[in-house]
Length: 384
Image (cartoon, rainbow, N blue to C red):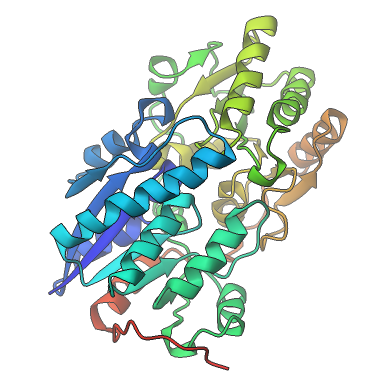
């Protein structure tokens, strides 16, 4: 049986690979190994490891690899720390293939460590275009990877044009869409909402009227601008004054700038219409997207899963610049008036038709099947 080692370093990592983990665990020819590290271990980012364990997955190893401070320098140091720690984990687990998810700094450390150790690297969500440092990391990992799992044909074409062997590129869809598809095939509703008051901080809101879902992260290539940028989004929310569920930012450089802007706004204005949360279980976040009147910010989720759901989305700033998107996304700059106008336009439009741009809900089993049967070769060369 092939041992498949999955590295989870953040809440986004987990949602991006959960369905594939389930499929690997259920596959008769595969054994799942799980390593949890980076911000997924930290309480201030929502203790994602607790969510993972509650879902029935038991980590084989945990690796501390975050140098706190959320600056460009600490991101580079965290990558280096991961590169120091992960080889020891790989020597202990002896995986047959390592799965590296997406485009974060821990993804880079994972791919470099495994490639140097002659362990085949399987990379999900490669070949996509976006803003910030993520695009550079994503393409660098593509050049280190030996098996590619792009979400759509456009991404696969870019990977092949980067010189990768077409036989190693498998268009499977996005595993995040699998979870959305499951929920929409069942009830698709919000489900029990007692967690709304039990978790989070801020205003006491209910979801029996149209509400907004907001998630805005730092743009690493615009470091130092985060507080001003989130200030414009918060000013727009103050004008809209709709019930709002808002997530704290991720661990990228500039995270503290955005968090500081959110704290200042909360302390000065005491908004009676916003409740703030560190993290949600993936299924809860999907249900919130399904139920929201509009998603706002710069997370990839309303672009990727949001296309399948058809949720009206206002994408703010450059973090998702160039990413393939459906008709549900309307772009706005870091300007409160522009954001307000875009949100009102999207709410007026309402739900969009479902778009399978990022898959049809069957990515996880496809990934497991390829990992079980595809040749795993570490020698690479340009294919053009």
